[in-house]
Image (tube, rainbow, N blue to C red; front, side, top):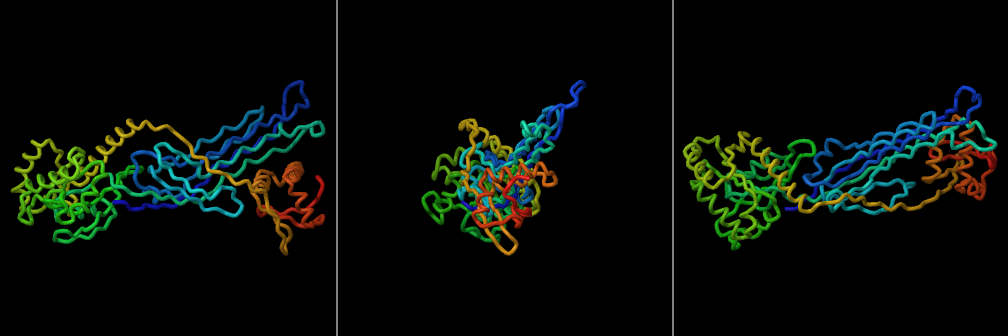
Amino acid sequence: MINVDTARIQAKGGNGGSGCISFRREKFIPRGGPNGGDGGKGGDVVLEAVEGMTTLIDFKYHQHQRADNGQHGMGKLRNGKDADDRVVKVPIGTIVQWYRSEDEERSDEIVDLKLPLQRVVIARGGVGGRGNTHFRSSIFQTPRVAEKGEPGEETVVDLEVKLIADVGLVGYPNAGKSTLLSRTSAARPKIANYPFTTLSPNLGVVRVGTEQNFVLADIPGLIEGAHAGLGLGHDFLRHVERTKMLIHVIDIAAVDGRDPIADYEKINRELELYNSRLGRIPQLVALNKADLPSAEAQLVKINDYLKRQKRRIFTISAVTGQGVKGLIQTTYQLLQRINQKIREQQKPTPTTIEVPRVKKRFQISKDERGYSVVGTQPKRAVLMTDLENTQALVLLHRKLKNMGVINALLKAGIKEGEDVYIHGFEFQFTATEE
């Protein structure tokens, strides 16, 4: 009863806010110093494993996940506000794998969100740029320069989760389980008017609403003696063991000349004889084929019987859709209560998985255009620089020198005035600050 559900999402961390260029302007202080505040950090895009979700179906509708940008810095040393993280909920057991470009510094590790409330950052928000107050010095009293906010990471991640059925459909062969599965989900099981059409479990994802879904399994029809291995008994029954609840589908039209009440009793007996737990888990009863004329004669009798059994009853037609919506909504609500009890017993605590970062410096190459510098740190320095600001270019040169980029270019044989490309931006090389 295990299938694999996959999705691919594009994530974008929020950009950091830019630092502010500002100076004190107060009475009797004609030459106030710089007082520009720093920009706020952009929000991260975070995956969080939660109970109550079992599929990735929502990402077919929401493939792009973007966090908010940080606020820009302001005058009077007021820093911009950090943006909130964009928390994206995924099922427990989701495996996360990144696509990477050459200059990214993340490791090749694959993350498995195995526990409730486990988190992993898949796209980091950019840091805020520093305001001009940081660039004041004894020889630089009025810095008209501030850093731009760092752009947030852009990543593509593949998600994979093993589907394990939350709800099992049980009943005699030809009761209409496969038709009900096809009516409520995108699953397309083989359907025909003869017993044992289904020879292996079919899984379908039932979407009730946004972040509201569950996995429904069409368990192959059971027969008397299944617990002892008759028919395909053991093969069938083992698939129902891990479900949290059951929907018992009964053919009340007695199309095959069977007795619906006897069928109901025999199926429940087989479940309990195989595993006593299956006799205790919640069970809803779907009286199917109510659209057929022969159903009316059985309906009163079986309703009275099931009420004495204290079962929740739904009269439906899987073919026409009659009563199916109410059955599915009740199933989801009951499943939520079951999951809540599981959460209370587990008492999960929030944890964050740290993805190791590979410390890569930079690489220099030469082609017919000139010299190219590739690396996360030089790229970050350029993106946070206002390239229209002369003072900012001086500070960029200083950053590149401190990183070792200038010396590395000189060792590579670069000459004054030759072209240098860093992350698509073109500069003319000079060994000294200007």
